Length: 217
Image (tube, rainbow, N blue to C red; front, side, top):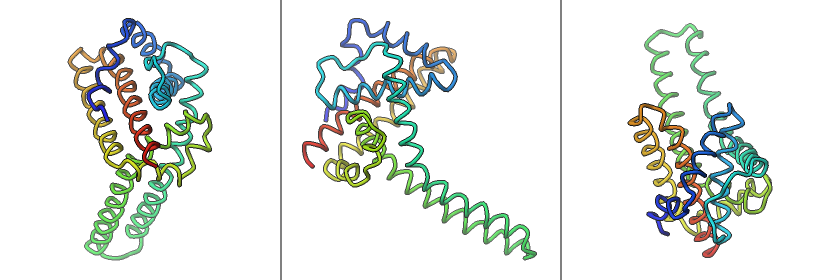
């Protein structure tokens, strides 16, 4: 897996500045823009995963909005377990507050519930951070939400290339931190463009991991 390439491939395209700028501006559209930008980055994942010659996409509003919508739905499904864990935590906290037990007992119950639930959410978030790149890439490569929700195949990709997907998770976090840092240094205005760049980096990592996973599965 070429980790560095994910951060530098953008600049191989002679029109990279124009493409990033225009798509970044589209990303400013409330809600729709963010879904589009997500899909634009996933187009990179699709092109890398299918070994396309030109990995840096231009504007294609309908196609990339469609990618983004599929990714949004798939991501929503993968976050359901977090809500399943969080809701009982809220219910137990409310019951403990109104059950007439002593304040000390209520605090102990809340502490146990929060620590246990928080640990479960943290563990699942790490698992989701490995599985979601594979799921989203499958959704855009095969073109349907259903393909992103085929959990056996998604898990198979991650199991076949665990290091690649771990590097993808690390790279995604690193790209996010760089986008925030560089954007804030440019008086906040730069964040518009660095967030778009972040989507490209993430997409390239997703595509690389998918290639490695599918080759080893």
